Length: 288
Picture 1 (cartoon, rainbow, N blue to C red):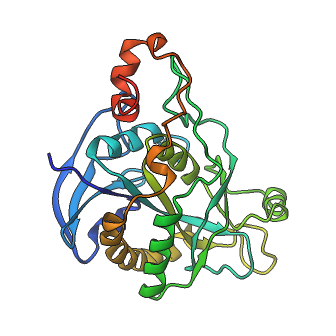
Picture 2: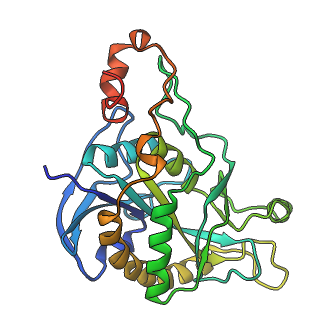
């Protein structure tokens, strides 16, 4: 199987984009279970990409139910070195309007029930996560977004909440007091696991609403989000069409490439053989 350098995570509307040549679907199992959906393998301008429907086709899984470890592990097995994640978010700032696109560079974790590491069960690793987004991928994707005509905000803080409920007004106002820019439910675990897998990762946050803090805007509703999602999908397709070839050609001179070099602190002789085998795609570069 030919390796696939670029991964895209998003909603089902993204793999019907103009310029994407469908090749095949790839279904796989992992030591952590099954990913959200089969990976759709295609090409954009000769570059192979793997698209994964984050919540499964038909939107069947809540943010908490997503198997984040299997999703990222699957990308690693396919040979993906860069992931561009597209997701709906709420705006926490007056100046960030629905259909704007934000490229956050920081996260705050407000989740409670999610496995978010490949380590454990006999192996301990501690990655550096001070800068959780690959700056190189975020920069080139933001540039593609501007070129496509999007209203872009580069940088910012994404607070990741558990869901599936939206925030209370008290929570929403608390996050605003923390200088949060956008609010979502999925991207933090993806970013953590991508870094452990030494995959470059960037978030394309598509604003759909003002959460519930805004005094004049309506409180967030599913109907409202779906309306803006439809508008955002076409723009996201244009951006990916431009960004994917550039991400594939980019020189990976970032710290993502060697994130695990000094992260594993367990004596290799003490790591259970079955863990070494199951994590070989992740740790095999350093531990055999």
